[in-house]
Length: 416
Image (cartoon, rainbow, N blue to C red):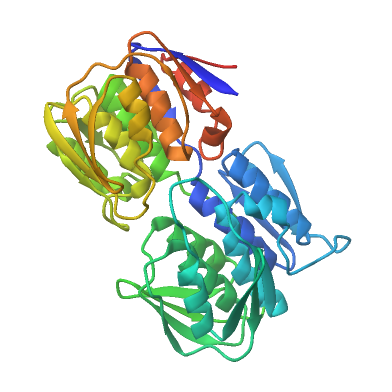
């Protein structure tokens, strides 16, 4: 499947972002902790969510979607197992967060080597380490990891890095237990707080203590709950870049602008015109100055917005630098932009310089990963002529109806 784009069209109107992918996936995993039901509103209709629901169904849940509402129930007739289905889990990195819930249920869990986007090495060291501190032994057998409970958790357990999914796995393991533990050096992403908010509604006792610590007091059960997932800040940031390139103006709504405060600040320093409202931003075509973009863990600049901003830098005046600190293959998309005319010099796998402004010409290009694929679509929007972006299904993993949303604000884009 591919997107075909005719460039040069201004974008005017409003795009409402869907629910946050990185919150929805974790809440689906958390559904294993509910003896009755969990109802999630504002659930994005994307491939990764569909696959997570398929995994949950294999693990004893039954799910039903009505528009953006997903209801997940315990299914007494369904077989239960502490082992993730290899085909589904092997293709979806987010499946790793089923481990915490499965360990809570069974005291053991089996994880196929996780998959996901090709953005470099993504070891599960942080998961193994925090699980060890929580009394879980990990062994590797061929293409599987076996996690088994062997002792009680330490009362204080420090993550070796601020890993989002390792933080979430620890929370899911502890929240329905007989234990009280303080997790230290936790990740700060708002999607974690949304997961905690949902679990707290259901009766879990979880709260942040200070900046990066989370205290979890285990409870016996979780009550049925309905929760609305927060808007996707990464989708919002992607549309913000589209507005900075082509907005006349473009409103992006349905999310909390504070969650992309740093990207907004950087864009403004580059000359961007961005008006912030309570749950929306308004953006006009307005970028002029080169910049330096360096990715770090939240609340600093997110790695998932690095590639859209890399495209933005091709249209800025002067020499820009982009440095990716979290993944070692996430600058591959720059090769596709080079084909379109971008002036990029690779320093190493983590750093490149971009000289602009440079007009781009439509080409046949590829989606190297989810966020890069979205960036290639934006590149097609500003390029002269026709651009074809292959592997549209990669983009569908994280963006709901990207082509429909863009057509509604004036873009010329079709799916074939």
